[in-house]
Length: 82
Length: 230
Image 1 (cartoon, helix red, strand yellow):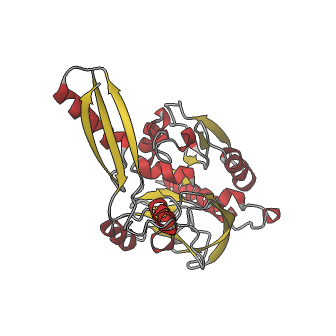
Image 2: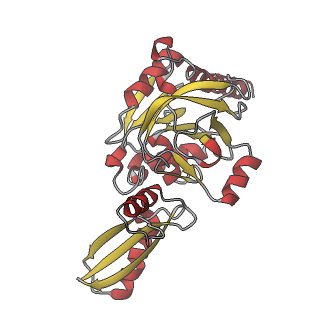
Image 3: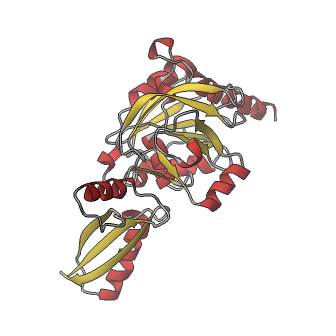
């Protein structure tokens, strides 16, 4: 059994209004060292498979098809023992 | 002529759209549940606003894989008219029928108000009854209507005259180049954030949306009389 840990974030070229608002809030709390905040999505996908390379291939497909919109988002993932 | 209003779980502007078609176009119209897998009897397919699948993951991301969407894609390929409003626009971009994507409003606020639009392209099946450059009043109601695409796509949109509506005056969501609505290259698929179906009677504060529906009707009539003569 494996688990895919997937991170989806807005592409650098895309403005992130939520991240911008959070940056402002952190600044107003005195965290002046904050240069930028980007907000993304974290997913845990449990996989019923024992084939690691197959799992990587399938998760990659899931990201391309549904989990990320590659017009605006980047994704990366790790496969860990579930 | 028969019009389909697609209903996804979480659609909420389907009734408004249905009523607008009935009131303005006066043609048969059906609600079509998202599980349907045959749209062959419909000439025009409308995707309403709302929050399909609760906007989970991303707006339109899950609806895009509804069984009916394969048929919507097929219909678009056949040249049938497809229009997505608000969440319907988001679904069309997720499905790849229109380029780009809709991001969170730059203000982070849900904006619900009458909005001024400029008709940038009145040479489409959906906008022929407007004058070029005409400013019309159409309501908006969205939190994620901030249109975005990469530079290359933007250049293509401009070169092919695919930018159909721009916000006039205030841009309510921070969209790229004030874009409010676009069409595909062929011109038979249109997506827009504002709601023309909510501006079809004077008592609605504006009746400026009526001409989108009369344009569609006019286009269909013209296409069919051409076919009948050929």
